[in-house]
Length: 335
Image 1 (cartoon, rainbow, N blue to C red):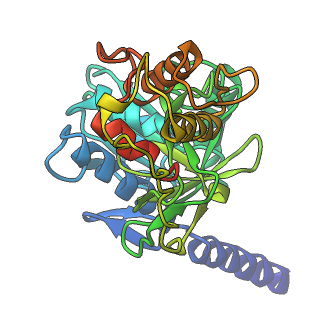
Image 2: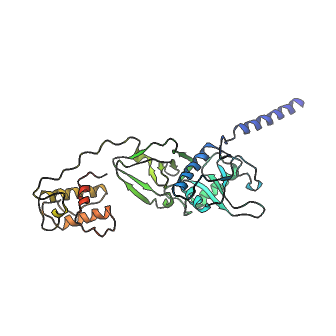
Image 3: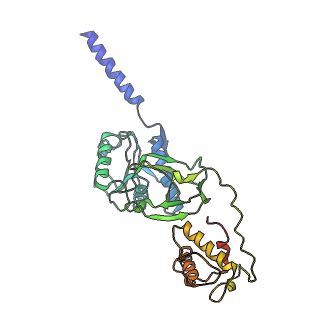
């Protein structure tokens, strides 16, 4: 009996030790207990908030992870990847915090229980307590993820449990030869494009996150705008090839006065060919039926107008007649 009692006691001691050793909280965030991935998430969010001038300093926590200090938290902070923040600027914090995959909520003050604050847990995390895991499961089931418009995510479901902060050891990323398209997480329901970047364009990302639905990996800047990592390279592209040279002609091929009704020559053919190349770069077709020719015609003007609308949408100067800067751009390769 005594031996059995000793064995049970030792088992309990070992269990407690193993639980203590298994604690995910291996670091701190401004004095509050935390874990590495939770810190990385807030480093990303701090960069975004400060870049957008919503905050001047890092977000303040009122309760960290691995904590049972607040009974009203009902154990949601007992594991890792959970914290409470002050309520300052909470609606912007919640909006942008959800954009990078966080389960971030504003909790209004509850008399004699808690003051107003922000409650955060990392979605898809295996380090959270059972109570926090239940909160995450409800959130994912109801909203799809932490989208700013609180709808289901049909395309882009960021997995903040695998979010990686790149700001300390960032490597510049360059768009590959086919360019890269940036997306806004806030509009991920329709996966709306934010911007098309030309080949060779570069930026320094602050974070990396995985799309939980497709498995694709995105890197993002402090805007935040998300770019598919597969469309980027860490190697700076080689120098751009020499610009296409306009053919010799009796008229100045780089002068706007050489284009328009009544003009003809090799430079008009060259002009049309360059317009075709640039429109193809944007996935558009020129209006020529058989291709550009040496005599200026309506299809030269309508094709150029289409390109002008791509370069300067809605500009009053988009009349199909090239300006000096537009001719210079035509003479270069699409980038």
